[in-house]
Length: 93
Image (cartoon, rainbow, N blue to C red; front, side, top):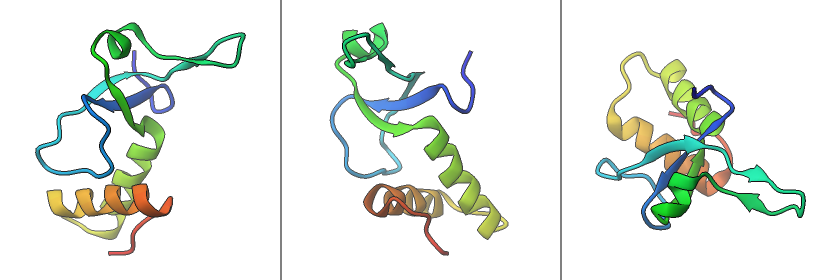
């Protein structure tokens, strides 16, 4: 099953930012082959998916937003995800 450190979010096309209507797929992390190549899960390959977010980073961003605001909105979470994608850091709300 999925755990904090073993899943990623994937999208149908390369996406540089999160938005409310973005469809994401959960699947396992790619594994590194003996030749140091990333080998993506079969579902990701068969559906031509693109890596959007590593699961641990995604959860860390959601947790960061949740600790800053008692009742965060969807817009708060999206702003936090996009800030992280652009800055590799957490947003201050």
